[in-house]
Amino acid sequence: MDQRHQSHHRPQHPNSNHHDNHQSTFKRDMDDSGRGHFQHKRFRPGQNHHPAGPSTPPSSPPTQSLSIQRQLYERDFPLYKQPVEVGHFSLDSERRFFNDSRQLRYYVEPEKSCPNFDLRDGYRGRFVKRDDRVKEKLDHILRWILANRSKLQSKDTAASSSPCALGVDIVTWRGHLTKLLTTPYETREGWLLAVTRMGGTLYISEVETEAARRDRENRTERHEEMMYWGYKFEQYTCADDAQSLPDPGGVVNTNEAFCTVVQTRLAEHRLLFSGEVDCRDKDPKAPSPPANYIEMKTSLEISTPKQRSNFHRFKLLKWWAQSFLPGVPRIVAGFRDHDGVVVSVETYHISKISQLIKNETNCWKPTVCMNFCCEFLSFVKSVVTEDNPRVVHLFSWDPHRDVTYSIHRDSQYSFLPDWYIREMTSSTSRETHHHPPQT
Ligand code: A3P
Ligand code: MG
Image (cartoon, rainbow, N blue to C red; front, top):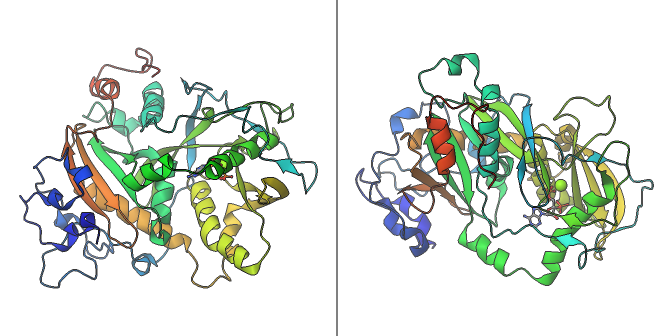
């Protein structure tokens, strides 16, 4: 059994160092201050919080973990407010931040239903790949926050005593929330999420797992090439402005990105998150963002009932979660063959995906995804009570396990940069006076 996940089966003394069951890779920077981090009294009965898994001996005290069992989350769909775009930003070909929409592209519908786009074209000579060894953590979102603080600080929070109250509970990437939504159905890849509370806001930033690092360092040449295909499909279907056409002869540079920043609420959790948007509807009469955004996807063409079922059960779950979160209403999917040639293009409306999957037995349910995410955020709020940018609670999950956590002070896991902490804790700073550094 993975040592890392035995800890939640053991009784926890409030002053015990519950980190000592962790893998050695996690041991290095752990401190001994695992004190009073799980305040059970915060969990109200009826909130369906399940800190104890079924394998916990009945006599043991309450444990410090969160169960992912699907049946615990099968109840009414929680309140999820329509996400509102509060801003956006762009990252250029060198990954530099701009507080504008210069990288937003426009969707151009392929002329034929069978377009024959060759997704392998340009992989050798016209491809600049983002360096995925560089971990940007929340930095781009934090730059956006500093440049747009006045937009966030609502009347009541501006008047509040804390100089850095943002008026939101959670700041994170959309991709991290997507992982949370799909966790009850995930059987292969675990995750690590670092959480820090500052100014009453919880910042959630992913940490690469050892397994993910190994996978990244040992990708096959075929896998590397296939990761390019999705970006190449975007290039065949997206233009730089509403009047022009896509340029499949250009360079694919995966440093470039346009990101929306949305605000919404999941039950009592006020969320601010950002996610990359592939393109927008070029019709000037299209609704305002995020309702005019379009997500581009590629997938292997479906030839057998088994393939269709797998597509519904696994791929549509990820597609739905990613686009539902920021309120992106449409996905344009290019179905390709094994040689990377797109043989058909189809549009999926996010609001119709639950209808599409309803004939699959034992299929995923949107309500389970959202309720689990909501419970996880409540769990995080109850655990991470110390307001301190130097403290990180590292939440850890592996398939078939409960979510557990460990505490780290001044460790390699600290992720809020000094320039952000400084700006947010100096009460006089406003975006008109200060500009965060570019890198
Ligand atoms: P596809 O999703 O069409 O395969 P996104 O769709 O999220 O905008 O991502 C664009 C493309 O990035 C993907 O296109 C895929 O090519 C690549 N990509 C994103 N996440 C990936 C992952 N976890 N593993 C491999 N490729 C990934
Ligand atoms: Mg995409």
